[in-house]
Amino acid sequence: MSLDNVKLSIKNLDLFYGENQALKDINIDIKENKVTALIGPSGCGKSTFLRTLNRMNDLIENVTIKGKIEVDGEDIYQTEDVIKLRTKVGMVFQKPNPFPMSIYDNIAYGPRIHGIRDKKTLDKIVEESLRGAAIWDEVKDRLKTSALGLSGGQQQRICIARAIAMKPEVILMDEPTSALDPISTSKVEELIEELKKDYTIVIVTHNMQQAARISDDTAFFLNGVLVEYSETKDMFTAPQDKRTEDYITGRFG
Ligand SMILES: Nc1ncnc2c1ncn2[C@@H]1O[C@H](COP(=O)(O)OP(=O)(O)OP(=O)(O)O)[C@@H](O)[C@H]1O
Image (cartoon, rainbow, N blue to C red; front, side, top):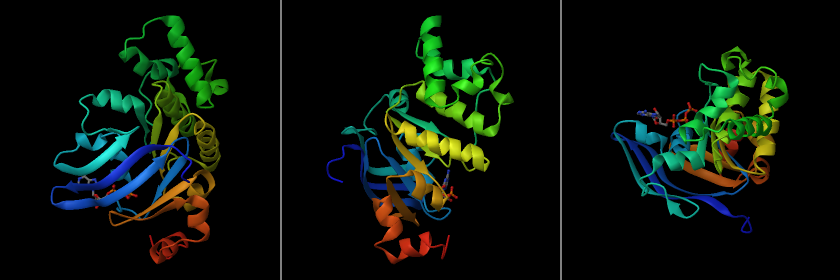
């Protein structure tokens, strides 16, 4: 474990919604080019934690955050440039949410906002991103048609391509397959395996089999507390904490 590079380092993280403490003294080092799964029962704070990693909670009123989150050793709550942070730490949401525009424009959207106008450059980014998200062959002949005409699974891969187009280093995924059918789910899971060669991935999942299949490390949350964090194979074969064991064997949650 110690040979791996740490990409995100979270130290003594507390998060409050008003008076209500949703994250309690979280300490965790997330490794580079690995898939880290966040698991735990509904309401335990997985999504809240995920959102702290690119400051998406800044958009919610009345949130107080204490502690430190470092990406590549830099405290992300000290930076002024949140846009740059969210470029480096991209996000894919639970429901596929392509913009109501063509497939091409969905992918080119972010790069254009960052000032890229040259058609050849945009074409290249679009193709590379769609290839990277394993959907190029399915859409290459219909790039100018609406992304909303694609299936849910295809839309989710478009959203992953849109994230990739920004050249992030970390991709956060909040239950990216929960709205998808089994075939689309396995396509996205295969894609995640591929993506970890180039990106660090943190994924919230309710699906224990999915966590076991695709992640290298797993963090188990309960009531805002990080109960256990270890290599996935260890957690699923020999959990250290009784509460982890009860959860992964389906005794609650
Ligand atoms: N915007 C918000 N304002 C106030 N409280 C919130 C907000 N979002 C989440 N919470 C509360 O924080 C706690 C953690 O919620 P969170 O959504 O992070 O859990 P979760 O583990 O992701 O749950 P689920 O698996 O159901 O998505 C819950 O008690 C929830 O009610």
